Every structure is written in structure tokens, then in C-alpha cells.
Length: 206
Image 1 (cartoon, rainbow, N blue to C red):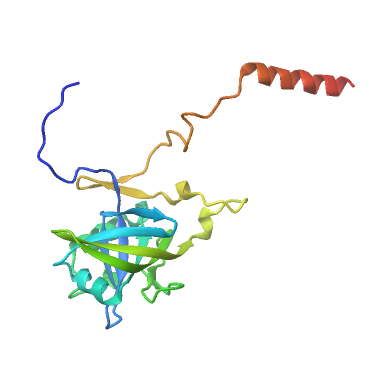
Image 2: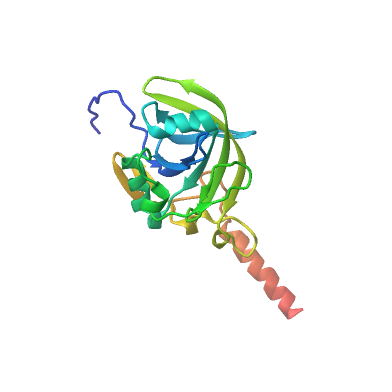
């Protein structure tokens, strides 16, 4: 397979497409769509988002030091795009995008009701990196739709129809190819299966 040299750039795709809610001292919430978001640490749970300084939400994040990462799905793809290409300086994105602000459990910033998962965060550090500032934050609360929980009270995110962003396009997550650790998981041998059947027959005849 031949390879072609390509200019250095941000080619780490796909990425989660999330709607981040934030607000400043005036307590007027805004929504910014972010693709540059990621997991930073599991203990304590931390995530990061990167935002350009010229974006309206940047100063809201600097003032409020809180935000909510709202996961997006196929039903929210249009609202997700809209909140990424319009500015909250002059419009109320909740109203324009048909989204419902919902009181969060820990932070003052509202969550998005229609989002399947809401991740409430408190900023701990801001890193000035160049074109973007990275906001590092502790996860202080997570809310999930009841519809995503199964009869064993296990979270089934597959049911959320989450979307991803790749090189300017939105995609619905597709076919499951495996589960964590499946590559080294031992498969049950055929002999074991036959042995179980024989045992069951003996029990039945006894």
C-alpha cells in the first residue's frame, strides 16, 4: 500500500460532536458545538474542550468556569450543526435550535434536555496553546436518559444513536465490530460444549 505525504494538521478523526452549554456572569446560557473534546483522566474523572479565543463562548467559559458537555445523536444533528455555525452574541440558540434548557444537578449552567447524556464539569485549568485554549475540567455529575438503561440497570449507549464528526461531516455510529478485550478473550471450545450436553443427558436419565 502506497502512502502520500500530507501537510501537518489535525487529522485525528472521527471525533465526538458535542454541544457544550456555558454561561458568564450575566447568567445567559449559550451553546457551542465542539469537536475537540476528549477524555483526560479517569480518577478523578476529567475531560477537556478546546475553544478559539475569538469565539463568543470563550469569555463565557473564562467567566463562569463551568460547562456541560451534552452528547448528540441523529435527532440532534441539525441543532448540533446550527450551534456550531452561528454566534450566541446576537441570538438565543436554545430558542433557534428548538432545544430545552434543563436545570443541572451540580453546576449552574443548564443542560440540554434533548441530549441523551449530560456531563457537568467544573474548570480546573486553562491552557493557552495557540489558536485554541484548552479547558481542563473535573466531571462533577452525569445525567442519562432512563431509556438508555436496561432491565439490569446497565447503561446501553448503543441505544442513543450517537453521532461522530469526521473531516467536515457528521456520521451516525455504525455496526459494532467487537467489545473491549475481545481480541484476547478465550473462546469456548467445541469439546466443552459437547461435554456439557453429555452431562445434561446423564442428569436427565438419572
